[in-house]
Length: 165
Image (cartoon, rainbow, N blue to C red):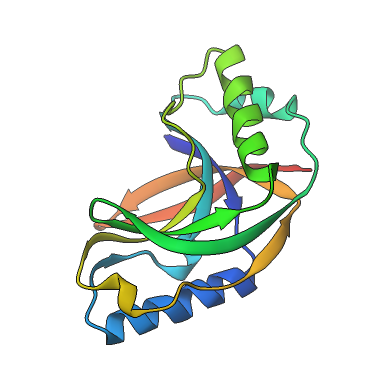
């Protein structure tokens, strides 16, 4: 199964991002738009694993305090459009703590420099700067071990386990 650790977004933030996506579509921005239910912020991407038990055990030992997450600017990684997120040191600290716990447990995960973002359009084309970045903020009080499933050419995410902060 394909796993990652994420912050699931509040309904207010999902709606704000979805409103921006509708605006981008009206402005002719093409690509594969992320469905509202799949919007999230990844703290650590793990990839394929046989058993999630070791991941759950590693995450159970992570000590985090709730933190604020606020949407910021939009940007791109080549043809991937994202919305940035800021939250003092909370987001970066959470990502580091999660990645350190996974490493200590011998669970490989993505080691690229952490850039807090929410992917909103893949294979994007057009002038994404024609729309204003979404606004919103929330208190993060939970992190989730997520599983991605591909079915009929579509991806869906489901929570396997969650940790309250």
